[in-house]
Length: 151
Image: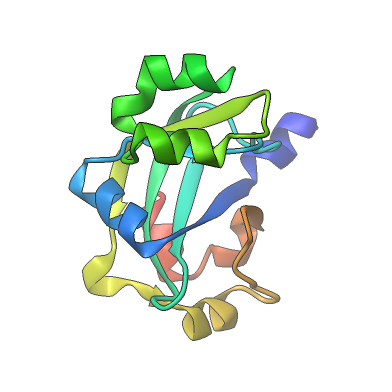
């Protein structure tokens, strides 16, 4: 039962515009987080919402892997794939014992057909951009253009 609930949820993350651009250019293949998503795993879909001033859903991808490690070890292993400098990385994790990296694959770019915040709110009842993570029930988007991306 728990697995069914997990498979019925889409992970939504908020990303600053300059990092989102790097993801879609292939310069950033690992998204860093201070905590791991609870209801996502290898093969889960990830919706990429771009924060202000853009305020749009720009794409979708799959999670290849979720890596957890000490910050310095994570940097040594995947730092060049994070799209940030070593200084930015260490500033981000300065008071953390664990660091998480979401390895991204199959990135689909919606830039030409991005979905604006107002449209997301119309498509998904109660939609609010997350600070870090949010989950969307797949059933809520089954008749929207979002569902086409997940096929």
